[in-house]
Image (cartoon, rainbow, N blue to C red; front, side, top):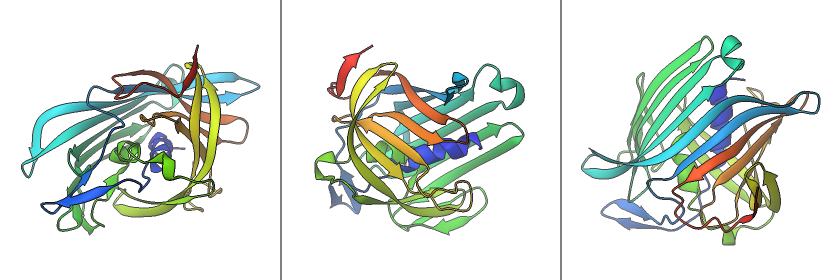
Length: 270
């Protein structure tokens, strides 16, 4: 599986259209208490099977930064994400992915997205320039219509962390739409309730979800992955798991800094 496909699948989950928005000067105002500039999250991607144990394949970082850059006179945050292969995986499938999203501070709609992908022999560079007022996006190869406030998959991670989990009930299906590879994707997320999860950082109270995927392309199962986020105001994604033929492929939170709120979901720190 291409590394960006796995990261993209994880990020699909986070576009949950829950929250409150108030129109102002033609732009919505989106409430965000989940994160702030200065937050940095680091993840480990690994293969886990009883025969081999845990084998780390790569490391990923996600960071929210301030910037003086503006788009159409509007202030933005810079969300900087990077993924790299590690150790022996560099010998047969070296990966270096860089994704940058510039999102509107008021509406949390992306203005500009940069993708730089290098995965083995596969390379892909792209840039998306969003025009939400006219409802289109310009890529390096085309200009395409989109629904207003469509997200790229990086901004979707952070946008959905602003959701109000108090409104969720077991079995809720949450609509999804995001822009990737010159297409708008539509799917749904299944909410499966609350669960206590243990990772190397400690034990956390979490919310559990399954993202739906279009079958027949990369995954045969419509719900191939399970994801957990902290059951607190931060809604930090701490674990993603996808079953393979023998074992599981996982992404696990390794470290964090600069959170906007206390990590009250942590039951025990290891």
